[in-house]
Image (cartoon, rainbow, N blue to C red; front, side, top):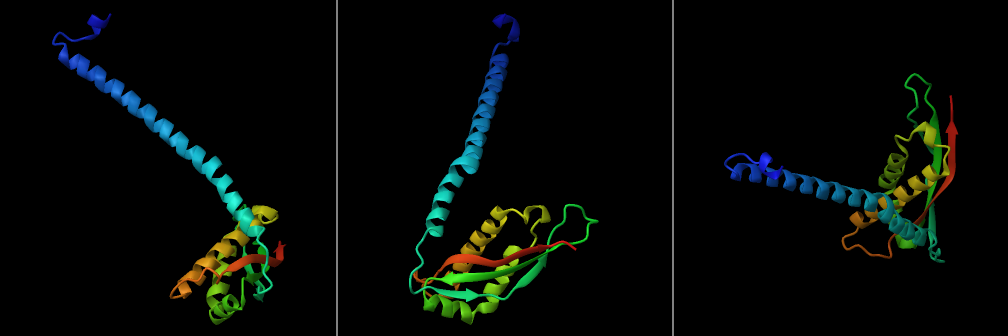
Length: 176
């Protein structure tokens, strides 16, 4: 049967067969690589991220910490059906700063931080707003973005100038 597959010249048939095998092997390697990346991205990386998040969430609040309260704000939410009346989220956030220097820098640039806080609450889906996990996710996002902004505002970033916790004093969904 092997001889029946080859063409009379012999060389072209073997080359085509070799190319098919190489193509199949390349496809198998690609599928395995994609599967490995998906497993890493969905299983392994989040495990390490949760450890890092838990360590920052469990961080002791130093006696030098200063809390900065931001005024209450509201945002409209994305509704499950476009013809539904819009619901809105009323929220109030407090940033817990590691020290008075951090608080002073945030106070000096309060509008930038207020905008960051408001942006982190924008475009939330109504269906998700009753879930405590969304609130925690928004807090983590604010913490990350606030610390990025603090680094940008310093000529030489000082690791002691940072926000150590974000607290929602209010998180109220209002369905109209």
